[in-house]
Image (tube, rainbow, N blue to C red; front, side, top):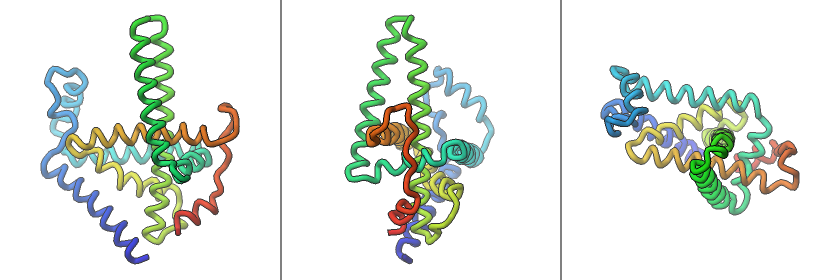
Length: 224
């Protein structure tokens, strides 16, 4: 157990080092993008004079609060979704499903650009897929946070603590130069794949609520 606690401590220390390096070297997501790009220009004007550490901490706080609100709305559903990749081969299947679903949505949006009549429909589909991705990401945060809490010796801590621990661990990787954007894309696709996998693995119609996960079994798996 002490070795596991040291592992959790080293993980958090690495994240703090990333945050410190971002403040020291002034890493920004948008600064190096082309000057003619409209959205980065707005971001650059908005962030002018704002310390990098402040923007990163604000982003981390908004990430955590968004996750907390989604958990408040869908607590049991998130537990069911988060347990899907834990099954045998679940990680690979979730990754592949996320990739294939993302490509499918991309082709839907691309084909709808040809015909103006289907473009609003494609935008609705895109919005729903993005919402599903966010739900899947929060479900993964809950699972990762519970695993970290078990490593640290706090298996009985609240879900809010689990979400906070997951955000503290995951968010710093999104601010790494070049790699951060790739990490975020992979995380979004994996969250989407997790939601699809959770639906594929249940013998219910799609309009049926997901069955509630066995919380005692989940806690047992996390503490093993």
